[in-house]
Image (cartoon, rainbow, N blue to C red; front, top):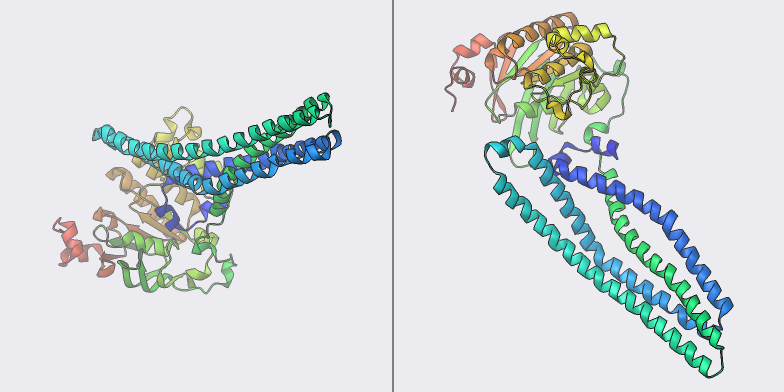
Amino acid sequence: MITSLLKAPLLYFKENMTGNIHGRLNRCLEGTIKLEKLIFMDFAPAIFNSIAAIVVIFTTLPVFLALPMLLVIPIGTAIVFRQISTQRGIRIELLETKSAMDGAIVELLNGIEVIRMTDSIVLEEKRFDNKSEFLRNKEMNHHIQMAKYDSLKFFNEVFFTVLMIGVSAYLATQGIISVGAVLTSYLCFSQLIKPLEELHRILDELSESIVLAEDFFRMTDIPHDFSYSTVCESCENKNRSSHIIDIHGLNFSYDQKNTILKELNISVEKGTFLGIAGPSGCGKSSLIKAICKLEKCEGDIFIDGANITSLSRKEMSQIIALVPQSPFLIAGTIYENICYGLDREVSQEEVDEAVIKANLYDFINSLPDKMNTLISEGGSNLSGGQKQRIAVARIFLRKPSVLILDEATSALDNTSERFIQNEIERLKKENNMTIISIAHRLTTLKNCDKIIVMNRGEIVQEGKYHELIQKEGIFSHMYYGKLK
């Protein structure tokens, strides 16, 4: 299940709220486990008890008295299956509604600070109450329908109980059976009704668990992202090139209507520092996602001479490292977070060196538990700059061929940013590493070998930092604050 989710297309997570997925996952797992329990621990014994009761009836009572008793079984079963078929749709709707509720709750928790700052508690209460009322109405309708079918099942059992007592009493008055046989027939019928009631309950719960189990298998059958369709090959078989990255005729759009990237052609030499600038929404992050094989695009992208369509996810991770603006941190120790994603064992000396280069040494040593200090979910007990420095420390351990910085130092003060930039520059020279940097703070791009400026999905300017400042265009407008 987790593997299926982690390999799902990114579009799946854009179309489904995190809380929605989490709620579905929990309920599906619980439903699947309950289904197994019902089948092996409840259903099988109930069937055995029902068969045993039927055998006792036929061996104890005359056939003409036993046969009418058995009519309670097909009629009761027919009612149960009718109940299951009519309530299936409602159960699916309830599942979807509960998932939407889970999504709403996680959304509220993620925005708790904004909600308090805007004093939107009353507004959010109304929004949540509307969702709760919708769920309550669905649940009420479901339980009313269930109560109707339960009444039918009860009436079926009472009817045949009265019928059986009446018939056996009549037969006793006619001298066909003894008076004691009346009591015997009642006791035998009671033994038949008891497992039958249990069987009805189990079938009803089974139908609900089956709906959840089906949803479980739908989640496990989510198609894998296109980037996992390539089998890992030996990097020795790839064609080498002087360009670490070659992009030809790259086009991309999210909805097939609004084009995000338009016929981009970019070549990046090995060991160079490329800057990408442009106004918000110009396509910078989409370009990075395309290079990282996170989004499927039209056109060709070559990494070290190999088309990324021939590179597996594993090979991509060995070549490219991405440091985003909002780093991903796990709920674990600082040490575990710094070493996250490494496919090799690292020594304590290597980790210490990475910590120093990421300007984390003083911060970590000021903590009581040092490297073993626990980080909260999402790094909520760290500042934005501290989270970014942990993410930067990872690259000093990985030493990738291509390092992509997507606003990776935006939360740092100027002193820390310059310190880390110098260390990254030293790593670049030592390992002939290529760096691609996106930055809104244009001074971050001052040392770039080349800067490309994007606007509306196209490259509109290229050049060095000082050249672009002096030219009329988007870059100089951004620099001098003239861009509208």
